Image (cartoon, rainbow, N blue to C red):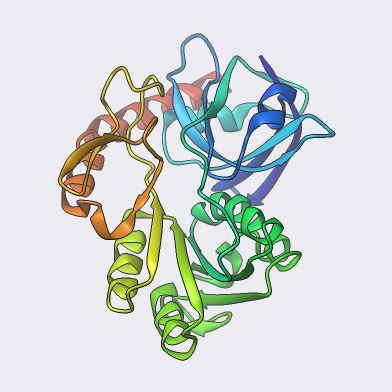
Amino acid sequence: MAKIIRKRVLIPERVTELTLEAPEIAAKARPGNFVILRVCKEGERFPLTIADTDVEAGTITIVYLVMGKSTAMLNCLEQGQEVLDLCGPLGQATDIHPVGTVICVGGGTGIAAMHHIAKGHALAGNRVISIIGARSADLLLFEEELKKFSHEVLVATDDGSKGVKGLVTQVLHDRLASDPEIKEVVAVGPVPMMRAVAEVTRSFGVKTVVSLNSIMVDGIGMCGACRVRVDNQTRFACVDGPEFDAHKVDFNELTMRLKSFVPQEKQSYTCYCECHEQKK
């Protein structure tokens, strides 16, 4: 069990941050690692990337978007309550070493996961440029947290309410075109965004890494549910990833697989919400 030390609503009814008591995981977790949790006995196992750790306090931070039954169940828990199962750290940690200037791109709740990676690059002595995007200013996450260690934080919003009006890929392209010293790009967020980032960086020949949040079940490479095709070979995101060379990922196949159970997911979420309302 993992006790909820702190619950913070980042975007009302949409995005929540939890700080969990998990000293053993906090001691071993590295940027890029994730955990798999189960809210209760009736719940399913699902992965969430670690957004931050505090080794001294023995805590980890996770951020999630309420979009299905499992995240809705998690969001019903309050500070002081416990998550039934928490397994981690899982996956391969981000390959971080001194390289110079690194751009970290984040979109949606992926900004939280990107935050941990960007922080790791900063601690390694790299110059970090963070680019974050959302539909509007009120949906931006972790901007202030990123400013604590990023050399620059660049913002893009669809409606132009903050930063550049447009997509993060536009900001990324302009920066790559003006700064030949950029050695690496890391992108975490929705699959279409990561795919677009890969296409932008491909033309500049810059190493690019993406974090793939594909379907996971056991998280230890036994079930094969998270398989992805990278460089025309099958890989498992839970044990071989979740990070891969963006220019070698088969995004067409990945997109199709992520859509496989959308109808069932929507049905499950609708049934849960209806039952939850009846119990109130």
